[in-house]
Image (cartoon, rainbow, N blue to C red; front, side, top):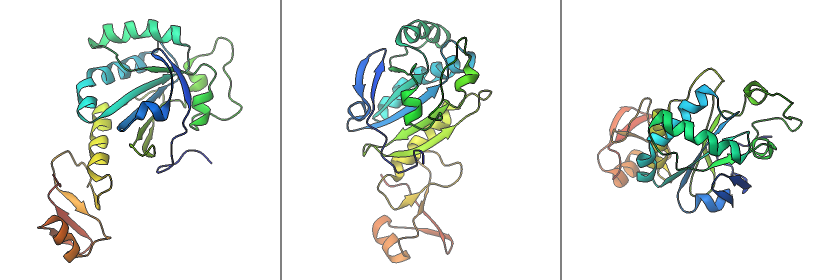
Length: 217
């Protein structure tokens, strides 16, 4: 059984281009986004790391730390960051986990236990290591996205999903399709109409089971 939503992310000790630390210490009292990649110096991954670098101020606004992972050693990460920064025009100030022994990828259920890196390997040998994890301050995984090799991740969507997770965290609300920050939210079915009005004020009952209200401040 692999890692699931609402399970605690393992407190792994990781080696990065910014030193060694445990994931729970890295999370601290905020949120964490871990985005993983199968190999350094690959085209799609370079554009993705660049997109994350360009959003540095947005992650900070949301009390969120980002950390990359690639199945290569630290020395390669350091060299690759120069390419990422040249391409994106932004500083890649986040750490990148060196997972050349595959320990982290296996622990997070991105690779089977018997996976190994053959001589002369390509990114295809670790293709499933293309996942986004969003982790809450309680260290529990809130969201997972897995992408194929051919599709670059949309980090505007990752940011939107983070906004939705933070808005609903510990609150009896949910967000509708295509929701963006500031729009109305859905009242949880755990609240009857009276309880919903007591908590949120005005509600809009579009259907008996679909009630919306203004996004709580």
